[in-house]
Image 1: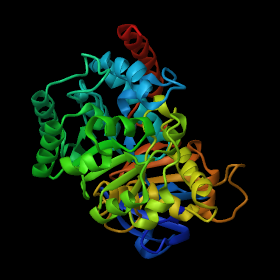
Image 2: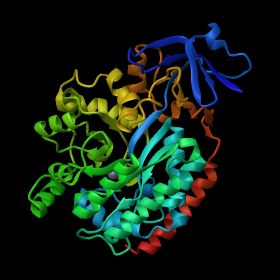
Image 3: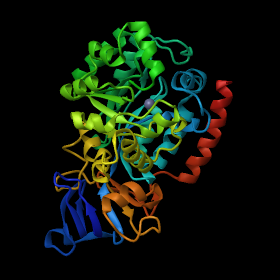
Image 4: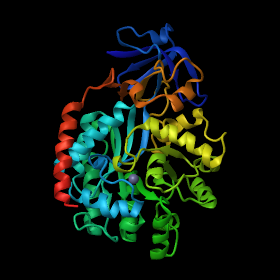
Length: 444
Ligand SMILES: [Zn+2]
């Protein structure tokens, strides 16, 4: 049966940023078939299940282009540390203690949180092992996900449980890609994920780039995040991480770099020329004390940008609304008060996020022919009334708790704030016991 979303403010995020007051979206199968005023013949829907969106905005499902589902269990276990210490003292030992069961529990809790907040698409970096469990959780949750296991074949402070041979890392990535990419009707995809320069050999990165290219897949890594990390790369390899990654083949439209806090102007211009994507993770950059990424400058230079919450232990939420608000506010502090207005900021989490992942022909805006990845968001909370510009209300005033309904690929996944595919109380219980067991195994 068709789904008719009726009576809302449709924020299309199309090329003209069209907003339709009292509008409707008609969904047939996986696709949006029409968008217009409620009552138009094209949007009235014959035999349709009706979702009442009055008092709500209907927006494209939000894209989070950098998350670590495997780290959700580590929320609150790694605070007040800078990046490299945070990794070596807490995150890597905890990741090394994961098994299939804890990875599944971690992903399930993270997906529940992200999706209840209106996230419909993620780019996820896993840990080294147990990554089938992450894909399995993504498949069951209904999310659209591009994900890949972390690749690590060297590095100071990498525990034995995470260190792998170059060959084994490439082979396991390839096995996962063959197993999961294109499954769930194309909802799942693979990203080759060498973790960052300091944990990867040149052979590993070159191998990943080559295999990703053969398969038409994304390469996802961290870059230019923290000053001390950059310094360590310079000390070890005599150049900045961006230059090293470029030399090793990570550049261009299939390369997605998380963070970019330390980027210099000429580096931004080069990334724009190449088409390399940058994912802004404002909360994580603040919490790890990494700094404020020059997003307005990168935007002006023409870099394709996206947003992401990063992982639960460096944020500590997976809430796309917090990232939207932080992105907009921090741009004003760093680059002046007219930087990144709300209308522009929302596109980072919708159309631009989709473009960063090569999915702009499929999702990112509410237009006939695109997949029905949508969120229905209440605008009638006391914190977002009585009116004013809809973009402003969405970016500065709305919260994850305002998300009422979420559709992915035309399927209703969140209804009245309840996830229909994840039993949230059970996921929470599982996560609690899995986190305790993981912490005990890690013996920090
Ligand atoms: Zn990250």
